Image (spheres, rainbow, N blue to C red):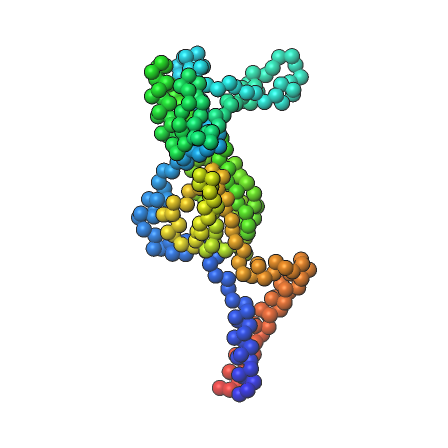
Length: 279
């Protein structure tokens, strides 16, 4: 009887030591997802311009000469010129390496736009500024077309992810899931229920906690990222405990864990055999 009690206690201990990690699945409550959450996930989102943003604004029309004064000067990548072996520059290669100088939103939220002068753009979306510029320019140019691109949309992902770093985003609508995808997703040691988002709002840092295992994340105002947001994935308790060990020590711990798992299986078999003999 004592032997069975000891074996049973050992089994309970080993099973506890080899427990399955929790909170590894995104949106564990997805079956409870509401229509409102699905709508929020697919809704349109646009960033709002901030001080320090760089905007590339290109104005075009049927008559290019008519809108020339509304465009910033065009710059060219000099490498194209240096790589041409002939005295004649390849026009196609040159056109592909042209870019317009960006407008920088100053500390008061203004840009200095040709002809129109100083314009307040802070807090506006690309759509709002596009409509405003087309209306103003149409006073002197027939059917102008304005295209605006945020040239400094960058997000950083650090912590327990596969490829931490800063990423330039070429789509103004990027969610926290998109950013984590760029970083190669969380490692198995990353806490999915405690992801930190650091955002700069008018010069002040705001830190919020997001739970990737719950579908209410889709309704969060922080689901879609803004330019220069930083996403930090905190390591779980297991990673924190082993962070002070060397690589060799971590290997030894892994070996011990495997050994303990094997002992757990053997113990289960022993209990089964004892139970059969006592019948």
